[in-house]
Length: 482
Image (cartoon, rainbow, N blue to C red; front, side, top):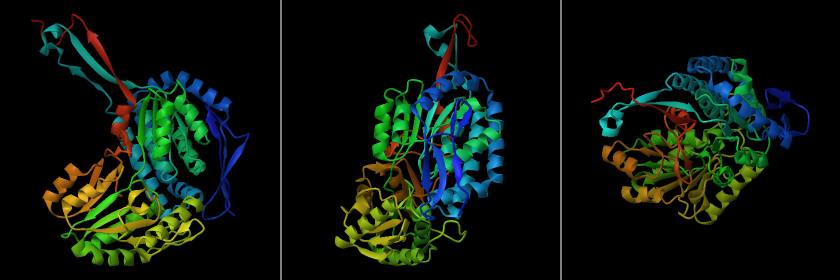
């Protein structure tokens, strides 16, 4: 039996631990691993009023002060990395090696946000370049936009919370966090680390709950900016509820990776095996569709299958485990069902296709039809589909048939293909000689089409979390007045 981790609501600077509790049963352990106090309507009202009052206090903190807090938090996360990774394993079934990787990214994200906080400024505009501007001066600054609502997903609850909360704080905003019900303790633990590092209580509040809590917060007039990561349907609901607010949506994906005939097939298969099943494939950029030139298709399928069969599956608390459990039994059963559908349509299942509880055996589906759900829809699970192609331009068009457009991968040494893919693929990012499932936390990240609106990573999020304010000085010029 593991110690149960309690996660209270943080409302108006106070941790509230009484009242109705929601229990999280670990998908691998099959036991209660955390409890979270569910936010009540009175909690929402208090949090929103406090956020409005606290906005000015947080905005008055100097950028150097904000940066110093984030840097201390990064150091503290490093010191507590094992505890935080263990929470992810308990609540989500995420293997320790994946959890450690996520926590290492939290450290990077906090550090980058600290550096970006020091760079927030403005500019002197060249108003004297036009006749009516002669004799005047105009200056801009980036000012905090106001209270931010951060709604985070279960698949990377620590790092995606770090992106939203750190960027919001770096910009000088107060933030209300609505964590995923599947990871309340891991999310709350990160907030506690930031508070211990010196983040003012006015800067953050935590409200646990389901979609009803998120919808009420999105619609609240006190909220200036909504940053949401999650599924497409939920993202549409968030945008509808938020109305005429700033809304950033990082939604789903159906990531494609193209393997050309000049690629190192063994290396491509190794990379796809490692990145297609990390976090049991529960990533919006996880490798899902791999299109391989027909001349190398069977070679790649055999090599990928061999690599996947070598993955260690099981206990997420075992440091040797590569693939733990999915978020719940229903998620794993859906992948089993879609695999069987593809097999019934003529695909070959070369490994996997079964589950034990929430643990989905890493699955490879070879040559499914183009209309199979494992090709057309977001699997978000431990499955990779491998498909042949003959013509490069045609496979780019096939990749673009998806309603999603988050990120893609490309294995080739042909610079013409690289430029063509970068220009023609309808995605927010292209990874060359890597799979779709690679991200640097200081590089802009986001998609097109149903994959969302806006770009994450601290620098670009700070732009969304701030507004441009202009100062016009009439009759005072640094440019000359004639």
